[in-house]
Amino acid sequence: MGNQGRSLTERQIARIIDLLASTDMTMPQIAIRMGCSRSAITSVNTRFGVRNYEGSRAKWKLGSTGKSETPTHTP
Image (tube, rainbow, N blue to C red; front, side, top):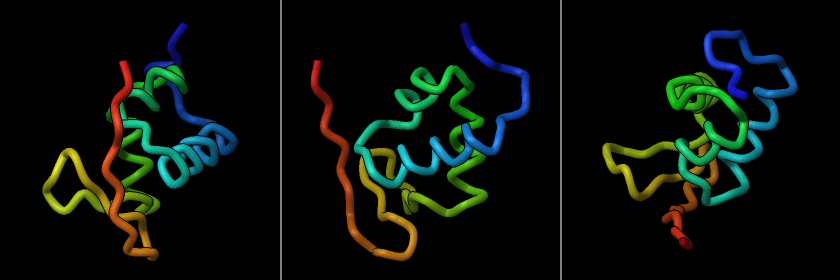
């Protein structure tokens, strides 16, 4: 069951940051895995500056590395 409407724990935030930084999962996929809302994932990303989408939904750059990432979708 989801955890929507509740505050994220420090451990959950750390895991979200790790998933944003080290995987090609989309924010909705991370939200499903973590059992929280997509807006919670977006808020964590904005607060900690993990991914910079620069107006694109399909590509991002990781925080300070400047490495471009394009998610791959496998059915």
